Image 1 (cartoon, rainbow, N blue to C red):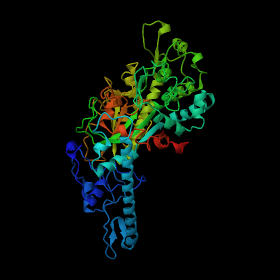
Image 2 (image 1 turned 90 degrees about the vertical axis):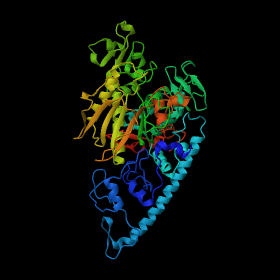
Image 3 (image 1 turned 90 degrees about the horizontal axis):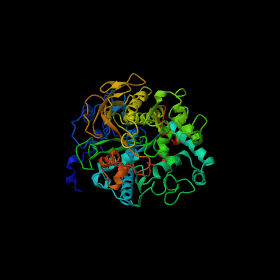
Image 4 (image 1 turned 30 degrees about the vertical axis):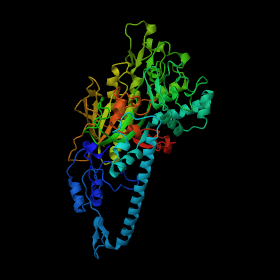
Length: 576
């Protein structure tokens, strides 16, 4: 692909070194404090040419005013230090006396050396990513969103590497605690196969498995799959191969050492991945990876909705009540299976009820359960546990809002949150799920301090127009004095944002519907580019490489996972 083919990007011409330093200070993707040397190149937008802000003009003039407006901490130096020796008695910008010139020159020399080393590290890491992406056993169905095609100059290379290094998996603290109990239980009570695999496993090891031990594609109620070697099939037809993983009846290649079990999928469905990325188009369902005007960069957060395609498994097991499934013999009820009790408490209920409890209206809250097939005989009825489902939605909502707030804070920006309905397509079992999912964000927001979120947009939520009784266009209250405007609309995830001249710039933080047992994009790898939001997300961004465990190996690991705890993020391994 020639540079001329990327005219839609308006690729910038190289800038002089001094201008790069000045422009870099205003970009929302500059490195956070403490994350290493700041790149010497700017991250100026390439989709549109924005006029210089007042801050940039001050930088170019060497202004030394240390009282900055919003988006810059007090005491920050807005000018650049001259490398020429100062006259005797002169005062350097930010109040450094001339007697400190030798020390400052030494520090400047050290910084140049550090910047040079950082540049070399960037080039080495980029080559590593490019080699891995070009040496996979499977092919990409699109080209414009490949690093080999897109990164045509050093600036884009530097940005791409920054994205790769700042990709991070996310796990809610409550889910992490249950996962640890799951490991302890399996080490003692698991099958022979499970005990052998989990014998020395830590929580980080389990998260490694959840991120890596996946088929390339995993879709439909028949568990249709495609492996990285091109093998295809339907697990349900093949004597339910995926359900047999982890048992003595598993058979190669579907064995626990190579693929996650259905028990593990319950956890991977609550594991998210946050990916800073470039966008090549607005991300509509039928975008097919064709470049067009869009928001140039943002953060794409992969999250999984509740899957009800397989009866008696995953979310069905936890939230749908049937006569054959919900019995004391299967571990349901107050004194039931310890893992089922753990999942129930995770979702905010004391236990998963038996079928007889639901029929006996005096024992349960009748408004909690929705009849999924009114008119059917009692023995054939199915009920949907709205309270357990709401608890699951709140875990997802808290993870997303905390991540959006932290990303914006790290980058000196305001988060523009794009939220989509998760599991509200073919996986949906009740129309009530739409409103329950939207309301979860309102309840969670009231418990959080998230001042770096500027707006929340619920996209394609059907006829739903309110969030916890807050109508579209109104403001959502939070735990502190901050309130957030929320809207219900039908925008695409990476539509161009209108940057305001007042306050910090927007940072797009968009959500996309991922799957618990497939690579990012899922159907994308089979060439089905318009089947769902998952392949559409892969087509409009670089998650096919940045979120790919075969390419970005350093980021897609348990040791790089961050847990959501008390409204903040912290490394998973630090909290063990």
